[in-house]
Amino acid sequence: MTSKEKIELILSELKQVSHLEIYQKTSDLKRFSKDFFDYSPILANELKDCLADIVVRPISEEAIINVARICNKYSTPLTLRGSGTGNYGQSVPLNGGVVLVMSGLKKIKNFDSKSGEITVESGCLLRDINDELIKHGRQLRLLPSTWRSASIGGFIAGGSGGIGSVRWGFLRDPGHLQSLEIITTEDSPRKIELNANNSEALNHAYGTNGIITALTLTTAPSVQWQQIVVDCFDWNQAVDLLNKFNRAALELYLATLLEKEIVNCLPHWSGKPSGKHRILLLVAPDGVSTVERLAKSAGANFEDLGSENLKAGTGLRELSWNHTTLHMRGVDPDWTYLQMLLPQPESEMMQKLKSEWGSNLLWHLECVRQNGVQRIASLPLVKWQGEEALNQLISQCIDLGAVIFNPHTITVEDGGLGVIDSDQVQAKSNYDPKGILNPGKLKGWNIKGN
Ligand SMILES: Cc1cc2nc3c(=O)[nH]c(=O)nc-3n(C[C@H](O)[C@H](O)[C@H](O)COP(=O)(O)OP(=O)(O)OC[C@H]3O[C@@H](n4cnc5c(N)ncnc54)[C@H](O)[C@@H]3O)c2cc1C
Image 1: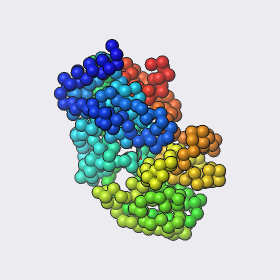
Image 2: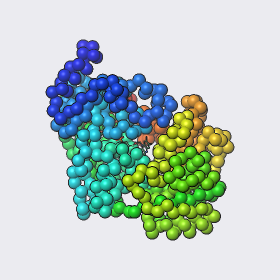
Image 3: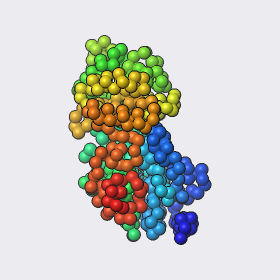
Image 4: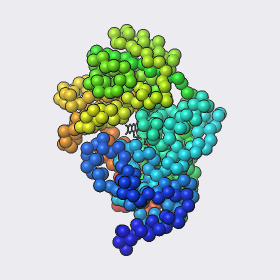
């Protein structure tokens, strides 16, 4: 059977499935085969021709089970997609096949008023979950800066942290994900429930080892975050002050530091550029006076922009994390980026690289809690000068003690985890024995010779 004939057979079976939208127009196939991988010129080149054969959007679990059964029967790749805002081609079908868009499963299933835990279907947008939580005096602990458009299933399977990481660390830290409901892609697909322990292997696995249909998350009490901007003349002084904020008895949701050249290019939502480096903070109301005191005693400018207006989409959080990269690329698409945990003390390493790379490297720092310790991560902007130059910069960062989370690679392991997680591979053997889910993205499975 030719591959064209196989796709025709799959299509004819999919057409029998109820509660399933099917997309076949080339424009739809192209739209649902891309994410934001073009932030990386390397991935842009590597993934430009990847195209789904069929795109489906189920609106019931029964429909997902049927899609899983049909794809298993024909051993056809099945790539899951939330909102498609990932940066590493996570939802791009490397070998064609079926793309399954999860946005039709978007019910909020339960809020437990005692524990604050929320159970939602995986296609729910983070924005909608947060809106629901605020009604109960709660909020999400962790959000990507794409929180208005991204789905919770995509965040768990493809994201890592972001706004809130300064307090709550990263999504894979124990205590965020309490349970999952998944559908397997075995010969007879099953729906199964996984407790917190068993869910870990599917957390940040790029949808390679199970179709997440619902999940339970812990939440935090909601806070009316105050937006504070602190401007510093000197970079090392700004880093010292950022560390002071990071380590003080302050309730923070965001602590970002941007080099002045970046501030000049951003929309003016944090105020007009002052020619100085800029710290952006989201802090609880009882922390504002402490931030002011620390800023003024360091000789920095302090500006209180007041409470966040979450309806507007023009707040400090939309200038942070990879939204900084987004705005910089809007000005000049030759900007790309790296992701790393900085060594301590941070300044020496940054200075060394700056003296060599000059204006082709602009520092963007984010405070995070890493393994329970307050640290500084960085998403520096890097002017694209070719793959060799980028690899040289990565090597230099590693030599100077940084831990790199490379956003220019397509596998779970190369992008974030760094090592093969045997539990992820075992979960794939258990729930996706034919290896049809998002093939090519789990290195541990590829190496096994699958
Ligand atoms: C401007 C910009 C800023 C960003 N900022 C951040 C940030 O601060 N923090 C961060 O972590 N990320 C960030 N990202 C990356 C991305 O937006 C987030 O990780 C987001 O949560 C992904 O959600 P999504 O619904 O778009 O997922 P998608 O991109 O659609 O999918 C992501 C991965 O999850 C898998 N997946 C999707 N749904 C399911 C499911 N139901 N079951 C199993 N697997 C599934 C997909 O196969 C894919 O591998 C940013 C991206 C951009 C472009």
